[in-house]
Image (cartoon, rainbow over all chains, first blue to last red; front, side, top):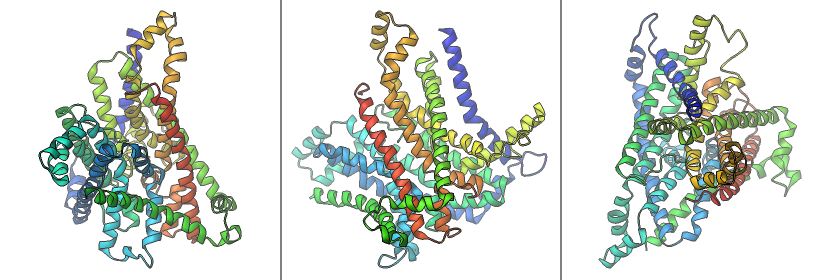
Length: 263
Length: 284
């Protein structure tokens, strides 16, 4: 048994090295803007750039809106499917899988082709392009969100809760917003954090819809300023850490309601 | 009442997708070279593809890259999951690995490319370290982060964590009773794995690897940020097509897109089928 656990440790070591060496490399690189000196100057440069602040705010807002739209779309759907139409569950799962079948680049190509010319030239205005961006992000978030909510729904007794609420005279909106959603809070939040982690640095769709988002900004910085770009990497990675950390904390609060992987 | 709202919302999602598909298929029908092939809209993209060698090679490169990283990531991820589930490691190793995998599987795209340039680039951390400590410069030995090898190393970074996340529950699903039964019948460890555990896990393993394949196949941001769009992958081709840098033929862009959708659809169908098979034994 000791031999096999030695091998296990070795494998784990390889995995952790693979995981951490690039992070250490990035961190090291980001601190070396000034020759022969450890400095936070690259971070200062990045954080004080107005474009950083603007693009970050933009992506942050986009992420929040996506979370709202995806939640309003997925949660009632999943609830209804769970309660009344369990037989169409494979169909819904198939729809959420479509986000894997259609890569982001193909999705955005289709969007541009359909919406950049009459009769549906929505892309011409900023508002229209922003709208399309949120819709595309929502499509990307569907899979993660649905899985998360589905796991949450399985953990609670939807039928009993619904019937109890009904016999107390609650209407559908009361049932959804005061009974079901609060019970799904952990699942909804973990879906929201996964969505946030996906949207905040998204590159492809934002680039082609010409939105001033964080992902394209990062790519842009990377072409001209290597130190600042690694600082950005560390910043965006910390955000991902924060999201996953939040999911884990939530999961600890309510065991069995966690979706975690999202895929 | 809610039901009608519900339907609306459901339809709305589908609309989103339908538009995408419409965009793709309309494009194919609008391709001039397709007029003579009317009614045969599916084979067309491939006809177009084969006319131009660069597109075929882009597909081949994309597939090569995706298969390699799916295999590498799959094997590494499986070994890691095996180590923490069945390797006799303490509990914290498992939760640490799962947390890291959760982060790493979302650490892709532009930042990941930067991280690898900073690590294995010409001036990268590891490159410099190895040069200074061992006096060996692997850039002189022909390595480059901008090459296929570099891309493979980079992709594997977001591939293996995904494998860990998906395969760990499957390994958890292996019942102790199966092992005991096998041992009672006189099976050795190897025989148990060869005849019991591995066949049960195989659909999950293959299925996850297919997911990894599609994951790599659709990636744009990572190769773009890593190589500045000079590496001819199928996704990069569409990217440059939309940018208008090459081949001013939108129909071709559609065709490449549709080709990608076909590849993805095939792999996902296979995934679905394998998923069904694995559920037979690994019911939760």
